[in-house]
Amino acid sequence: MERIDDTEARRRASAIARGIACGEISEYAGAMRIWKEIIDRMGPRCPDDLWPFKSNASAIEDIRWNAGQGGSPNAPLILQCEREIMAAARVLAARA
Image (cartoon, rainbow, N blue to C red; front, side, top):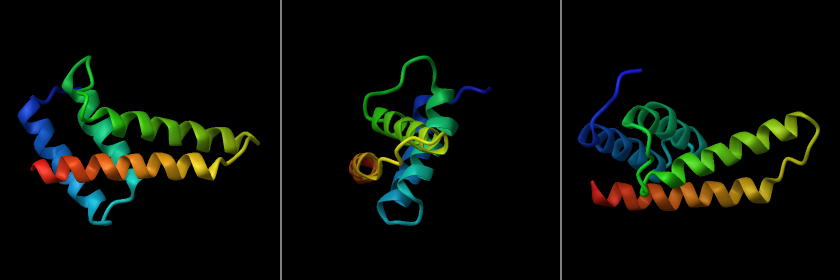
């Protein structure tokens, strides 16, 4: 996987964050893109301001997997994760 530098990573993450903040991209889909397309290509450490995207996308992914295995769909926790993604997206978009 090709690495991307911090400047390019932040440019791409900000663009996705703007899409999340204005409702063009769902919270989960946008957070997954920031995680898989950007954070995973930045290096071994996730920057603190991008962590909410990775951690909440991962939590939603786990909840959905668990629900598919017969567990609880845990809608309140998914909603909380989506709210945290939206809050992080608004902060990131405002910095751009």
